[in-house]
Image 1 (cartoon, rainbow, N blue to C red):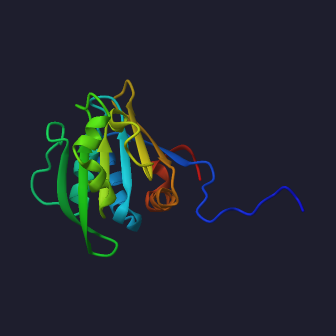
Image 2 (cartoon, rainbow, N blue to C red; image 1 turned 120 degrees about the vertical axis):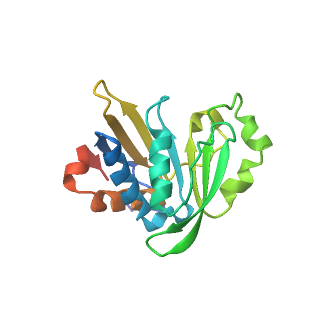
Length: 188
């Protein structure tokens, strides 16, 4: 018998990744609209990483509007979490959305004290800005988007999928976006 074992169901290969350039807010909106079309968002956890001003909250606003959230979409910087109700376009099913911003956390233990574990265990889409401030308390992100801004104010975005659900979302995005929207090479 050889030393090669069959893959365990649900086992991931190395994380899948893709890179994009968002030249302006319209490009950000196009990407958010494509992400909103992915059925895997139903119970996904997405992390947004980047410095202040990288465009994390702007991206979330476009995503939430694409998911049918009405009215003003506030940044949860002071409230830490903002709940929303949307609709998953792929199925027209109602979608609970939790938008977190852990920027003001001084200690990851604040996550536990605030009772956020229950929110993360509930159904719906969870989006977290500044996840490193709650490090060790959060589940593995299905999809992590890292935004950096270059000298020309263009957003360089790296998407990394670390779960099977995240890989399905990432593959759906790659299929939904025009080839001109992709930057560099994408590993899947």
